[in-house]
Length: 488
Image (tube, rainbow, N blue to C red; front, top):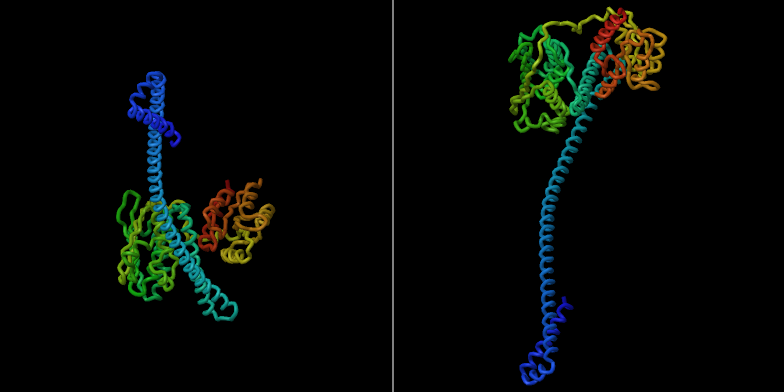
């Protein structure tokens, strides 16, 4: 800009000088114009043109600079607005990050508490199991002491098994892999077993147990998942028993409606225990939550029972409701819609006598000698022949050269596992041997394992620790089916 102004300044100075001369000496101007008239006019014209050009040029440059500055100001304003927006966004993200950090910290605290409680819960029954077993082993107790110790070992093991099942079942529920098994059953029998199970426990606490069951369901068969219904009721009754030290625990079951073969039953468990505050009723169904963590040490519990109960009731297409008052007790209720089955076709009663299978041979494949011994003791008492092998390869070799009626196959074994051994047996050319019923007997209770059991060709699955009655019924079932297949 400074260079562009120099010619204008020079021209202005020249014009000022000429005008000054004209003003001071008009005669000299006349004389000058007489001899240099044309040249003078030309100089003035050129000077004027140059002055005009540079004036135009200067103002155009100035205007251009103004426009550029305006554009930059607009851009800076936009950038500033963007920065303000980004600052707001960052502030929001920072707030969300703080909340997420707090949530993670809270979740970690809940899990730490859960692990602490679970560790306590697992070690408590284990301590009883190991303690009473050591007592029997180390000393020579009389028959009464042995009976008492074995009884305590059994109840402690059931407590431990319930805890492990709660943890495994909740994982299945969270993964969406827990499916209901719809089979015919007698709901009346379920209530009878529960009443028998809890009557002694509540009596020892001085609490009265009352079962009010509608007469309509007695002798009736329904279709549903008996195991999961039983699990829900065990969780609710255990919860009531845990927090009730005086008064009553009542299980009510009544029919609320019938639509054809669909019966709607309302089931309610009521207690006169310590009760729950209104605020706590909002969180008791959350996983790993107990209304008072420190109080949990006194009453025990993993914090999963009610969470599993809620999820199972929802699988039934229902909703669990709770009413409670501090110091007055609680009631948990839900509706259960079950199809009523008129005929008992293809229903094998649990009371079926396995004595008809006396002399049948059961092949037990398991690499753990103690597990084999436990199974063998029951099988021998039921009048069955037992052959033991250590792994899948030995199981396959035995089937190649010998006859057996059923195979109880562990899954995880050295050399050849249960899956591979089953596939090898199913490929045999001998039809009778290749169709031998194979029941998986394993401590691996994951959903994926159940799927692999079906895929490899096994007939059924029983989890360890097994229920003797379940093992008995499945041996009966597949022995009968095998006999029918052999007759074809």
